[in-house]
Image (cartoon, rainbow, N blue to C red; front, side, top):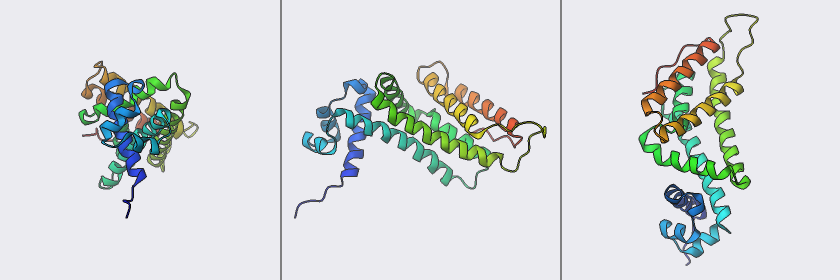
Length: 212
């Protein structure tokens, strides 16, 4: 009886191989043959999952974005009833990829971003990933702001979407600054904490504790 192949699992395995090679050589230096060797599958197996290199790279970009989003959601689920403010801090910390164990993932993400600047097909999945992360942050900020009132009754409360967009852009910039050595991880965390503290003041909510 022919062995059943889990194609989704194989596609994810191939995507991981793409990421490893992209970290070493950049997206342009990735070939389907090298991916097959790194994933320990045949070239034919790669070609049955992806029609060409472009399709393979698109899937890998989405795979990295999904992994970051899923990890942020998993941390929220694992935390023992965090406050909304703490939840935002934890999520922003995950998105920023500041920890040493996420350094390779940060390099891969920025390599895809750089390539997407000159490749609209790659830019599309990246925009989708950023949109998902922005929505997650906006939902958490909305929850944190629920029940709070602005200090001035005539003042307009900050927009959760605007604040989420700003926070996402900040985390993205911190990823780059840490990766090239302009900031240390501690310095980047201090910048992020200062921004979040100012956000809670604007929302008239309790300041979050500094992430561990």
